[in-house]
Image (cartoon, one colour):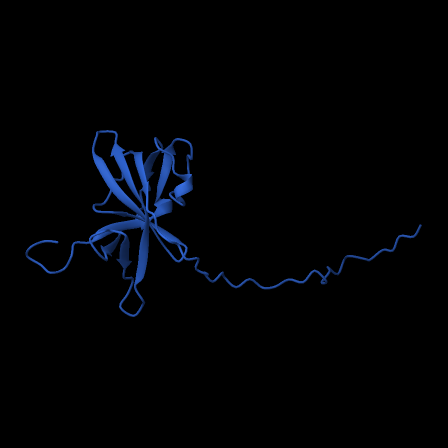
Length: 159
């Protein structure tokens, strides 16, 4: 928090599919789940990455708040893991993998460089209780198996 203002400094968040493995075990994959992370994988940001401001709910950095609009409810992202990356030039980058209602975000204290490669060097999974949440699926019209096409003629086979 800056001493001149009472507003906390925001963290920066992007969609996990914008930060994909460039080289390594899971090449082409994003940060979808902790189980899919491998130390030594090299990540790179998508050129069209959009950053969203998020705020830490407390000093422990276990929950982050995303406000999309004034008339929409705030989304609280729970930090699932603390990730440490190292650039090929030796600079350290700390990030958090946050989740809320089936949506995942990569949360950083500063925006990552688009042209840089980031090597995953440490994964510290958070020991949290996760309560399953039902997320509404898009409406898909029901199809019955009894409906047949008009060009199909039923046949009966006998002995």
